[in-house]
Length: 162
Image 1 (spheres, one colour):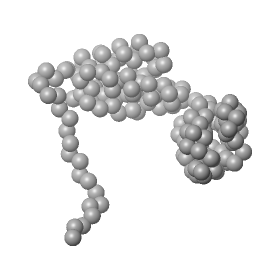
Image 2 (image 1 turned 135 degrees about the horizontal axis):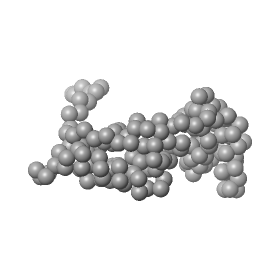
Image 3 (image 1 turned 135 degrees about the vertical axis):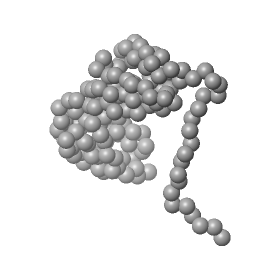
Image 4 (image 1 turned 90 degrees about the vertical axis):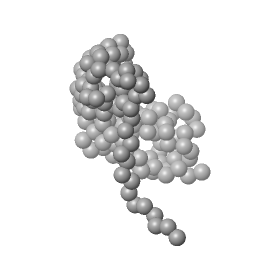
């Protein structure tokens, strides 16, 4: 008989296979250049590098901009991990705006109905409750919520009923 472990102490360290480790300043230069060249990343985002670990700071208006910056930085040779500390800066959304955004997205797909969803917001956080008929509807609702102006996080409380 064995006992189940309730925690894991992960001491995994990522190291480059050869001795040609890149200098932090060189990695930072490449990250900043890549961020600058990507039209989806605003120029308000900065990066610092410490032992190959990239930390992104600054501000963005949309979640997709944060995601893009993280993707770009993670693809730079020598980057071991990326920490996203980018803040979202825009007005707090209203529940009505988010619900309207989701309904418009659902109307584009005639098979989806948003009437069974309850949308609430608080300080940029959107909570979606209710039932959808498929994972496609679920994903559409999440994407639509993120697309609404002012959303900083989305809490998914939906049930998928087949």
